[in-house]
Length: 179
Image 1 (cartoon, rainbow, N blue to C red):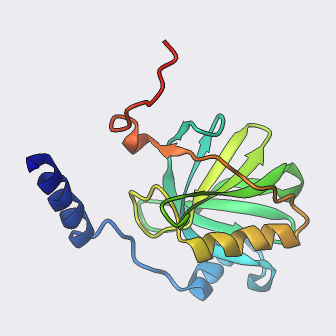
Image 2 (image 1 turned 180 degrees about the horizontal axis):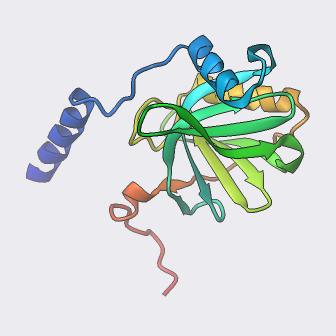
């Protein structure tokens, strides 16, 4: 009983103390991305605040970083912010290298979403969230990105997988042990 009250208080405090990053309007993000990359803002079909990480495979852990996701008709760009707040390209992925893009869903109503991009070097997971400790992203924002990729001829198969953040690694007890 004492633990559940403590856990509830921790969750409440983290929410109240602002684990969320400020929401930046899409047009402002587009302008920032265009400035850094020399792209035309009109060529950017999707842009959003995210957390992203690369896992070796599904049902694994990834070290997520906060940043910005942008997509054009030919590539996906991931940015991180420098200490000064400027955007810096972290990863540029030609869409021809994206083998598939699906959405992992969890939660009682499948409302927790992760965008999974299968790449030659692993599974890039994108969480469309303003929260620095997010395990999942907003359903509508994730779906918008998936549709943008699908309209650029990226395969979009169903996904039954999830990738965990490194933050939960010490708190997740395996249900089945391989030993």
